Every structure is written in structure tokens, then in C-alpha cells.
Length: 228
Image (tube, rainbow, N blue to C red; front, side):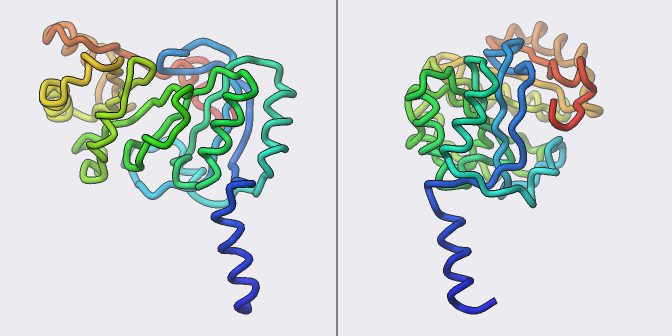
């Protein structure tokens, strides 16, 4: 590839007018506050993290470039009110911020699923930010961007995916240290195959935690088939 082609590729990757997408599909929202609502999922390609429990590794690579207008038109065609922008890590692409704003401007109820490793302060305030906090068991605990917590509001949510009792105890400490539950809703999820849902539910009840237990509805309904 010559220098001109390299420059063109670099320009495309940083363009705010188009994004690399893995898929756009309609399903029920499987988790967080909007669980159960018919929702359009816009899954962006690429992620700088490698959590050991990741269930969307197929979104790390590949994908196709979409113009923002084409994405909006596809969303409109599904005919529902809720839109979730996810990944991968959607904020790793510059154009994600423009997409979020345009979806809000179009009147959609918009949520963003993000790893918590990238600054969320520039996200349109109309978006409900669902921010992960990576536990030691994730393998990516050092990637947590703790400054994001100060930017969260009652409109947002924080999610912990727990891989062990050690992760649970660690998360309890983080809740107390940062007083997260006094700012926004907190979600605790069991990592599939590592913590039994009933076990996590009992831990939460025993500790009287101000958190919301959640399981992934889409896995119960469709066994997590791609595109659902």
C-alpha cells in the first residue's frame, strides 16, 4: 500500500461521518434499566480490552464502514423507540459521539454500553451511559478510568460482571469507597459459568447491598445467538 492509500485509510478510521459496524439488529434489550424493551442494537467494531469473559469477541475485528446517514436510516426502518449503541467498545471510534447525538436529536431513547476504560464526559447528556467497572477476575482491572464515576448521574448505570467471591468482595469495597449507589443505579451480574446466578443473588441479599441483580434476558430466550 502506498503513502496516499495509507493516509486515506487513516482518515477514514478517524472520520466522524462514518463508523465501522459489526451489525445492526432488532431484539429485546437483555439487561440494564431498559430490559425487555424492543431495541435496535448498533454494534460497533473493535475494542482495546480483552476481558476473559467477553461474549462478543466476534466484534473485535472485521466489520463494514457505514455512513451516519445510512445508520440512521436503518434504525428508522426498524420502527422502535429504543436504541442501544454497543460493541466492542463503541467510544473507541471517534464518530460514535456524533452518532449518539444524532440518535438523540431524532427522538430515540438512547443507551450506550461502554467498558469504562474511555472518557464518557463527552457523551451527549441525553444518553443513558451503562458503564462497566472491570473486576480483578476480568483480567482488565487496571483499565478502569475512575474519573468517569464523578461524571455519572441518576440517568446512568454502573455494571459489575462478577467472576468469583473475591470479585464480589472487591466490588463491595468499590461501592463503599466511591459511594456509587448514591449517584446512580448499580448492576451486579454473574459471569456465565463462573458464578451461579442463585449464588450471587444470595450474596447480595446477605450483604443487603443497594444494587440490582441482573441476568442477560437474551441468553435465556435465544441462547445468545449472534444477531439476536
